[in-house]
Structure formats: C-alpha cells, structure tokens
Image (tube, rainbow, N blue to C red; front, top):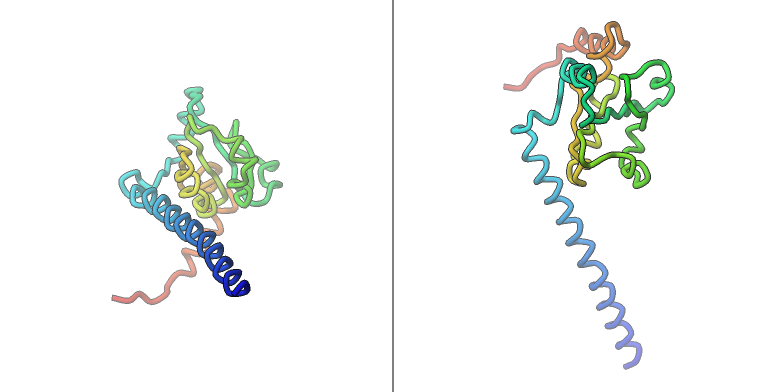
Length: 163
C-alpha cells in the first residue's frame, strides 16, 4: 500500500509540474501570434535606409540602431553611425536585452535584411518597439557585398512555380 501511495504521489507531482509548462507554451504561442497578426498592418515593422538616414541627420534621439550581423568583424569594417553591435544570435540573451531601451525604436540591421528578422517577433512580444531596415547594409552602402549576394540569387532564380 505504501508503494502504491508513492506511485500516486509521483504521478500527481508529475502532472502538477507538466500542466504549467503546457499552459506556458500555449501562452507564449498566443503572445507571439498576437504580435505576428499585427505585422501586415504595421508594414512588417520595416523602415527604409532613407528614413533611418533622415532620423540620424535630424539628430533624433528616439531610436537606437543595432547592428546584428553575426560576424562582429563586419561591424569593425564599417557600420551605421551610432549603431551598437550585437550579433543576432545574442540579441535575446537577458544581459543584452537589458542594453536595449523599451522607450525607443530599436532598429535591427544585418547584411541583406534577412537575418535581422529573426529576433523581431520575440523582441516585440517582450515589449520592445523593434524594427528592421529594409535590405540591411546592402541598402545603406553602395556596392556592399550583400547586394552582390542578392543579385547572384536573382540571376540564378528560374525555378518552377505551381499555379
């Protein structure tokens, strides 16, 4: 009888520990979905290089540019004036989130505009006013190697479409 009671107790504890985890996962999925459904109405939280340049030239202080290129050496080779460097794979680390203001626009920038999109939904779900710059550094710097990467992909594109 004692062994049966221990088994029942273990099952009850296991159930009690599992239910909150399942509910937390459902809550997180809802929170992420709530952000994602807002994307089309908000133009997917993208700004253009011209807009960012105008903000910099106007000496606005309501934004921060975060250079999220995964290779920190690229930041050293040239970056947007005033940008801070934070590799995309480190953006959602608690110590880095503390460096990002919630009361300003956080503009993420990478090489071609693809990688910078990875943390955007997470940042928005966490309450950050996050944006990305369309086409990344390729839209900022004439002849930037990322534009060449995109052009190569475009030139090779000729795959079948389903209709």
